[in-house]
Image (cartoon, rainbow, N blue to C red; front, side, top):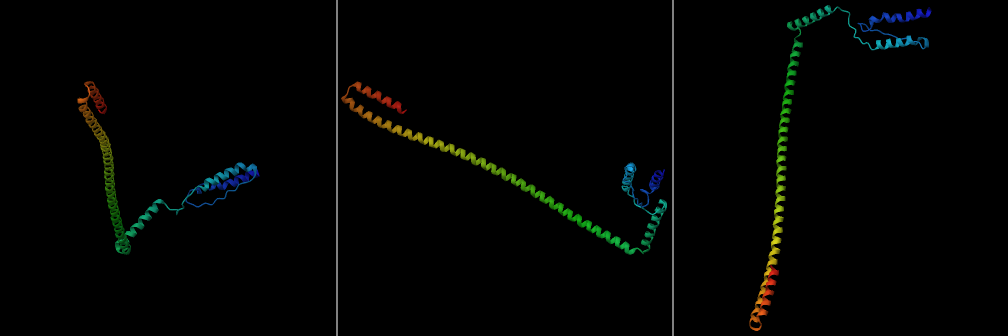
Length: 218
């Protein structure tokens, strides 16, 4: 009976503070728990409640009816406008005008710098495009020159090989002609000599030998 009385009294303040959490007040709460095993459920429930209460945040304000607050705001605004019209707020008005002019000047300056920066970026991009185009043209010209050089070297090599081959053929042909000419003169001399000293059979043998040598050179 006593334990039930204390348990009810301990939980009583918690229920009485429910309306204070999240309202227009600042609330301080102390969670009391017991290390006893038989109070485990109560302690766990208290800790859970304290954790939820801790996570609740509110901003206390003056207790005022919303209509009265709105009316007071309008009255203050009307009073401020009257002061501006009567000249009492002239320094503030001048300050506002000055601030507006300075703000416009800064905005204009920023816009000019931005335009200059954008114009510089455009010129830089255009220059980069021209450089890239020139680089592409130069690379194409270099490739064409390289191809032309390779073709020229190939043609020159073919001509050199042909010249060497023709030169060797001409040299061999000249040598064969000289040998044939010498052989012809030698045989002709022998034939002239044999025409007076030897028979016709010897002359035929010499003629056949001449034909064999001629075919060999051909």
